[in-house]
Amino acid sequence: MSPPVTTYWRLAGMSYLQYVNKAASTMRGALKEPAKTKAMAQEAFQYNTSVWSGGVQGAKTPVTSMGAAGK
Amino acid sequence: MAPTLMAARRVAPRAFGTATQQVRGMATEKQIFNQINATKNIQKITSSMKMVSAAKLKGDETRLTKAIPFNQWSFALCPEPVEVEDATCPYDDLPQKSLLVPFTSDKGLCGGINSFISRATRECVKKLHAAGKEADVVVIGDKGRGQMRRFVPDQIVRSATEVVAPGTFSLASALAAELMAAGAMEYDAVVLIYNSYVNAAVYKQKYKIVPPFVFEGESEVSLSTYDFDSDKDEAMADLYEFMLASQIFHSFMDGAAAEQSSRMTAMENASKNAGEMIDSLTLRGLANNHNRVW
Image 1 (cartoon, helix red, strand yellow):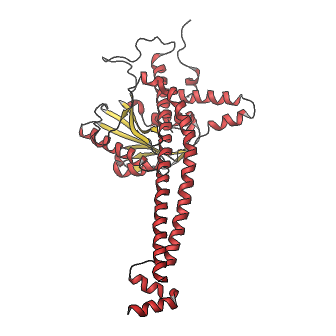
Image 2 (image 1 turned 90 degrees about the vertical axis):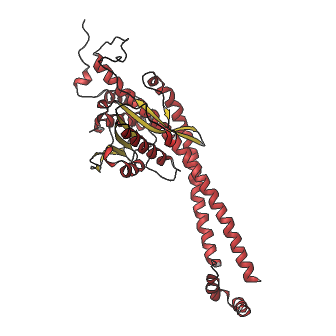
Image 3 (image 1 turned 45 degrees about the vertical axis):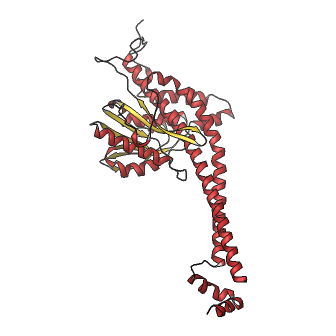
């Protein structure tokens, strides 16, 4: 049997970190209440990002999920 | 002149007190009283801020003690963190093209913690340029953003502000994704500059070099002694991403604990200073009162 050429999540256009976080999120989602709410709160985060060019700050974009990070 | 003034003041201290005493450069009783009250209010705020950060420090310390073993593996692939020794730090172990990542916060009132990081980054850029090397900056935290914009505006490629603490691995992953988007793979190393917590009274500035893996070439190829199930290049790119996230996670926790401890110390000092001020104002008020009565 030959090894797989690439991973299925890469084919879906995910990065490794997106995949890892998605897996963690799914795992947390499988918990029962009240542990679920507590665990789900752990993955929430928020920050604003902006790209700079030539010493000038670009527009701020709020980031709240892995999918939106690094855009 | 003097006896009449004394008599006048005794008759109507409120009416004359202001004029005569301001000539002598003294505050009136009322002014001193107000100032004492204002200082007392500030002292209440600073001492409660101190209590809050002391409580939060406990949480930050716990998170840090968990983050250290979590990130320990990455030091098998990266050099150990190096302490920044103020202006004398040579930064000569940095490669030709580095991506500097200063970790600062959005909040003030925590001593010089953010300024130390900004200053270290500025020195680092200056020294790298002097050595004919390149450096770009991805700044984390609004305080650092403001300072870096003044120091090295042209080097900034990306910024992340209003980063909400406490950090989690999800947050670290997102920040790592930001670095990847800033082209982390095209640099010879990502350098994380952060505050390292030693104990509640001491923190140090450190930098961590996270070099990318070497895929091919004359020099030593990373992890050459290992066999890979899947495609090696892909696996190593993934591992690099994960290593970056892990290192960011650790640096963020370290910085958060240092910031909280620094805030605690700053607020403690502020409360102490306010207390001293209240004492001296009270004394002055008493002396004033004494002069007026006698």
